[in-house]
Each structure stands twice: as structure tokens, then as C-alpha cells.
Length: 272
Image (cartoon, rainbow, N blue to C red; front, side):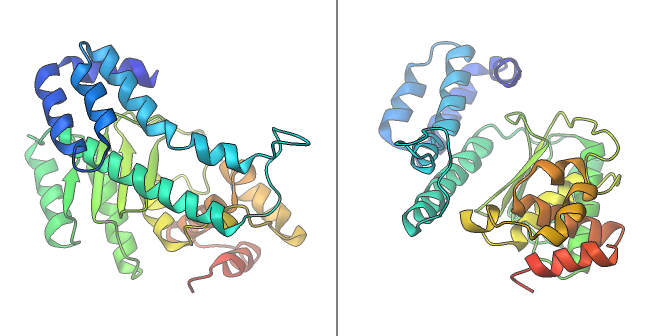
């Protein structure tokens, strides 16, 4: 699905987009990748190169996370410093790649209402790069999410981008960048901790409020909070700890938390 969408997008002004990608990615990627892009003859070839480059950054890290002797599919029980460092470096490199790619493929908005929101995000909330792709509905949600975070004295990301190159609804990157899927999936009731229309952009903003550590993501939830985790949202029930914390924080700012949820939030809130 993602490949097909990317091919359609890259097919429009293919030569121009390819050159812009070379220009921006040359600043953050090695020569090997740039050569591959230069040699891409079709939108399909280019789309495959971009997708492979983005997700190959996880492969070596994933390999090191797995035990290779007794059970090659079992994750390591303990997180060593070397793994944290590897995750940090991989996360940083991927963030640079994503931001450069999005800058290269940026399509300026033409809708006056969207342009007005982009200017507010820059002038009032300090955003450096905003690309909302003429998506008026999503732009309004983003602005509302930034307003909500700011009112609660939460630092907001410097870059906010509506992307054609996403599978999930949103993602937060370590270089103060959030990406939101141009094709927002309608989530069923109960999947997230609120039914608010600004849940997704606010959730992504709030990922900047927890530690960027693998050990935090894998931190075990105490038994007394198991029910809280299961009932908070379907997403919380199946996710790692950093997502549970962010689901709690999003609900806290939109609907408020019950006493048990507040207790789990306080337990996980290392930066309080």
C-alpha cells in the first residue's frame, strides 16, 4: 500500500522530485544512496530505494536485540549501554533522512486557510518547517493540538509535516519533527484513549515528553496497573511503555484521568 502511494506521488514531476531528493539527501546520507537515486530510472525504482533506505536503519539494531544462540527470535532481557547508543544513532540518522526527504518533496500549500495556519505555527509556536499539503481538516487539528500543548507549557516540535510517505497515522522523530499521514485512517472507538479529533497530532507532540530510551520503552508495568493499561485503550494494551505513557498524557490533556490512570501516569512521568 505504501509503495503504491509513493509511486503515484513520485510519478508527478518525477525528474524534478528526483533532483530535489539528491540535493537534500546529499547533505545527510552517504554517496552510495545518492548514486542509487541518481541511477533510478522510474518512480517505482525510486520509491523502492527510499523505502528500503528508511527501514534498513532498523535491521542491524533489530539483529542486536535478538538472542542469536538459544532462541534467535527472543528479545534480549536486558538493555546494554551499547544498544542504547545504537538506538540513539539509528534514530538520529533516520530523523535526518526523513526531514531531508520531506523538505525535498515539499509541495507548498495554496489554500489560504491552510497557509494562514502554517504562518500561525511559525509565528506563534516557533515552527521552522511546516508542510501541511493543503489538508485543511488536518491543519485545523494540528493547530488545535499545538494550542493545547502550549497552554500546558509543553514544548512543541519545530517541524510539522503532512507526509505522503507514511504507513502509520503519525510519528515523532528525535529532531523535533512530527509527521502526520496525509491519508488519516479513521480509528474505531476505543482504539485510542480519547475520541477527540486532535488525538493523533497531540499524541505525536507528547512523545517529546518522555525519555528517548529503549529501556523506558521496555520498562515493565507493575501488576497493580495491568488493568489500567488494558482498559485505557486498545492501542495501550498492545504497545510498549512509551506509547502507554503518551496515551495517558493525551487523555490527561483532553479528557482528564481517573485516579488509577493518574497513578500510572505519575509512575511513568520521569520528567515531572
